[in-house]
Image (cartoon, rainbow over all chains, first blue to last red; front, side, top):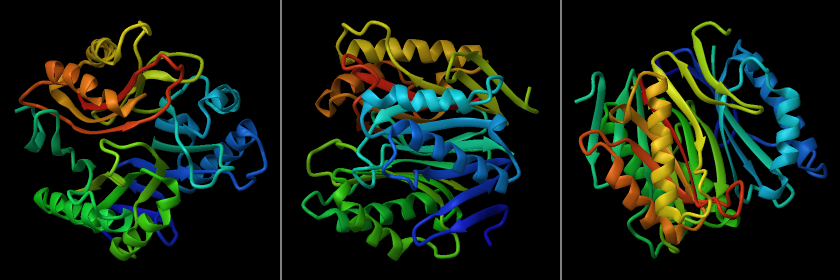
Length: 117
Length: 117
Length: 117
């Protein structure tokens, strides 16, 4: 609608993906399998991010920046194990990872990224 | 001053609005009425964001990305009620919402957005 | 590798700096001297950010946006004292500052910025 902005997957509060001026913004993404641990939830989140990137015509090799929130900072290593198994070794983004209580008590990780198209 | 960057409302630490290359960045915004609950504080914050967007020559239909911090994640629904009453239904941004202790104990919500001009 | 994206200082999980389309993203930065207080850690972080900006061919007068996490929000004033002694008074970015537990218990502050080239 708005000139030059492409929005995908609108929900009641937000869109999953917004594109503008060659940059793709992906919403804070969490896992569906809330019974999984932090590592498994991270792997699921990263798969979802792959899908969102593909929907916008880009991929993980073009991620610019990422924000990671873990529900317990002592689980950062679990998140990082899944992250390192996934990230393009030749094209790592910048990242900040801090602790935050997330939408539900069993949500262990939330990740937001921006990527170039 | 710096080539191509427009800065509005400088305070002692930060500017409220910075424009560059067609993208408007708005600082983390909180409510003045600290005695209000999370829903009311969110409504006030969103009014302030409307004003900031207008000052930069844009509006909420062109918001790209948002970060929301609530002081108590159990109040996320209150924030979201005010958000949904406000957000342009045809032009929702991406968003992440996590819990964080904010500048003062009675600050219930802080919101940061980027928008296209 | 990826068209138009320049990445500096890759580590096992992330790059310290990513440039794209005239915007420089700098990773969440923390101090090496973990025995220092919040003010001193902030001053060290800001020095590191100066170095990262220089490596990307820009400087603090061109910072657009910043995210600050302090381990204890009651130490925000300490962070802000170091910030105000450092920030270009004519070119302040937008900023949000919230509390978050960081990678180690003695990490008092983490800062992430974006800048124009």
